[in-house]
Image 1 (tube, rainbow, N blue to C red):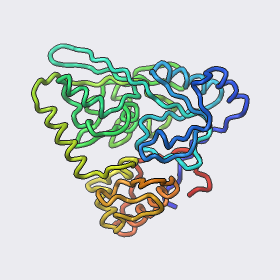
Image 2: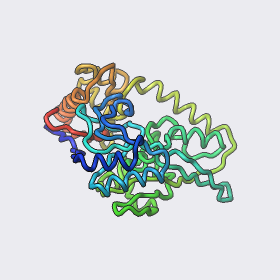
Image 3: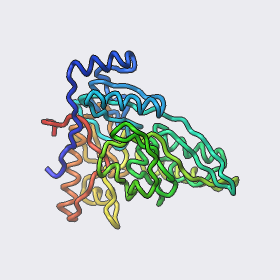
Image 4: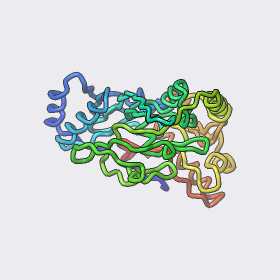
Length: 321
């Protein structure tokens, strides 16, 4: 099979689980369905689950889990990921650290310091409401700021690299360090954080904006919202399934390979845009994975293009696909 799920499985012994319950009490839940927290409404349970309401709490929960020999999965807006039906062994931390601070720099320049759990689209619209321009492209982008840094999110010819100044990262040793944009190695839908998976966690980011009191920014947002409604399907999906190959579009290739509208179970390759796989109801991750394989092989057979996943596979996949 062309795709092999990445195994993010961390087996938790009863002693470690007891220590986490003792340390955090009601902050942790057991066997919480992750389908409640993913944009596709798909995903099995997390063995242990906690919600971080601030960057400091996110860092503290992560440090505590690591001290017990665990590698927590940090969950943001739940887009651009496919969680297996079996779920995730170990600890999942939902990032709801959303504090935003606006800092005027003079000469019309502003910096927005934003915690990593903030919704990127909501932040972009908030900036426009404050007459700050530069982030309009992100007004319809799902997911969190942390996820946007991790994958260098982009749309409409722009991406986060055009705004990012630096990011505060929790290091594997528990310290916090600010990484300049140049250190993050941002590329098309990727970064060094995504490529190397060295254990750094995005806590917050500084973004550059400019003051602009004209109506042009809101007009651009309105245009992007209208474009999304015309070209992307409504309903529960993970976002773009595959990265666009150089000089082409994954959706066009999947459609031209005859896969548009293909359905397995309750999962359908959208008839609106073939790079979106939509959950029509009680869809399963295994059915999504099967469609991924079919679409990938159809495009490879017809065009010789080896599509690369944009969505990340997480959880326990052994024996499922």
